[in-house]
Image (cartoon, rainbow, N blue to C red; front, side, top):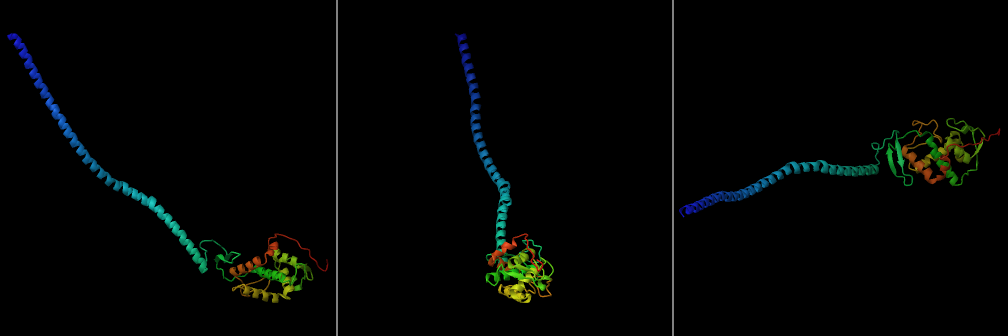
Length: 294
């Protein structure tokens, strides 16, 4: 019994020792879990704090790196582009207004349209509105452009019934001796009004112009008076004619016109007498000289 008890006692003691050891082992584990929980909570709090700090930091960085960069980019890429577009639009509007002002003031637009001529005018035919001008009133020698007014008076005479296209025109010695650009009309030669217009419009013939001036008004001098009166009626304030052809003209002689005045008489010819295009659009034609010799 004693030995048996001793064995049972030993077992109980061993069990108690083991249980004690088990409890001693379990206690740290429990503490560790609680501490871990606390630590986790602390870590969570720390993470929240860090996250908050990180967020603040990132916000700051965004503001510094993001927003500022974005804002900078927006200002560079966005605002500047929009500003550029606005400036372009405003610039275009200002240019349009400037052009309108130039038109209303009658100022030259030489800076926008390169023209090498000493003076120039671009006129809208149906309204007479000047679309472009450069020194439009500068007085210059017209040379054969003079014949535009000669043709105006010829077509007026046709319209008024004073002459007809089939009428014969006899060439005087004065007309035959004009020189310059000519069709070599001979003294006493006859050509119809129609053929004389061809010679003037196509060949810029001085002899034909003089022959027609004499045929309509009796003399070139009288015809030139009518030319100057017509110029005055059209408002050609910078024009004076001394002959019907423009031959040997110069400012000192008193034979001159301006780009604007040329536009005025050209518009008169084209709009009032559109039949002139039947002659002025022909590149080449022929006439038959009819003289005393045949």
